[in-house]
Image (cartoon, rainbow, N blue to C red; front, top):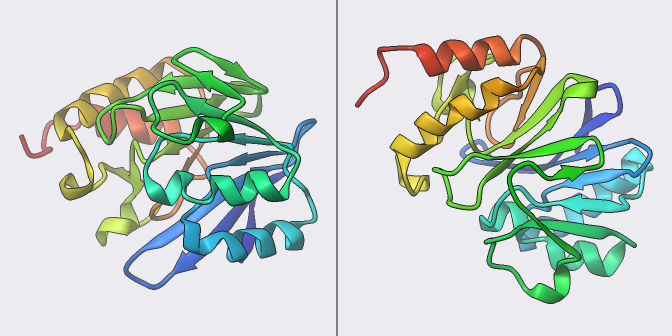
Length: 208
């Protein structure tokens, strides 16, 4: 299933069983870009969604090494003429990687921002020129935790290697300007995302 979430930005929902949702994002740009690849078992859904959009990716960027983000990479590399970008410390078959990237890297319109905590290799991708950011799993949409959508929450502690670091490092994202914040779990925030993220960062009532 696919939804044009923003102009030229497609939310490819690969699996949604009520308890968990897995997705990738496809950007229609000068170099069509797929961000993350889902699980190994969701590649058929990924290919169907890409076909339905009608835009074949030429670049793949991986945000971090969790299986629901990098699991479909081999199948994508086998199916499309893509150039792949993977964080420096992400554990993935080197044959699938064209370029390793780190904090501050420029990949097409995106600036990579290292936001460790959820995982040590986690990066967000900021596209200031188009006023949007792929926040990866640095935050979830609030509705993923049973709260009203349109806001952010931290990922659950059980899925996060260092929850304190995950919280503290969100402040790094506030150095950039963006209105839309795209997340992989829960609903993305399509307006005022930076302001809402700043309010979350500065909220004093979060559990210690």
